[in-house]
Length: 131
View 1 (tube, rainbow, N blue to C red):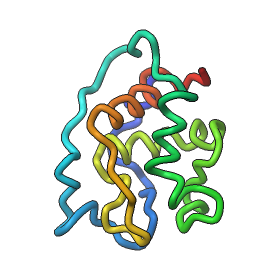
View 2: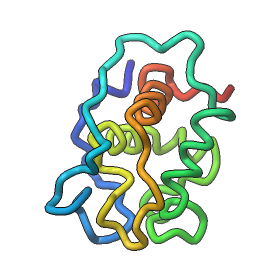
View 3: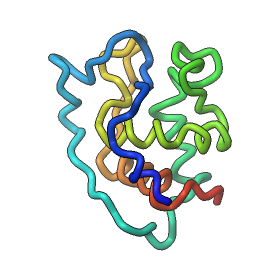
View 4: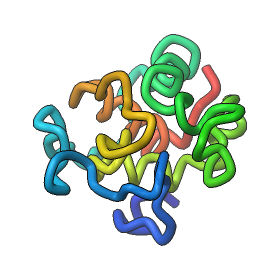
């Protein structure tokens, strides 16, 4: 069963701080646009080592890494951590809620649409392969 069947709305928000807006006035960053909802995993699937892990390190572990302000909500330090939290993580990335532009500390950068699509594909339709 694909994770997308669980719905886009997350029951618990992953956040770096108590701030819930994703940008000024609650709007997502300008670079955040809608993603496609693929019905099958791309060939070849996104690679954990060369694509997903660098994505997590660039955009998530500042808050969701060891000692991060949101590590208790969702630790994303290892492959297994990310796999265990992938439903909430892809929902947040898909919905342009993470990284949280209103977070403290503020994100260093925001993923491109291509990077976000890769992560959503890996976590959802590809079932988080460890390749």
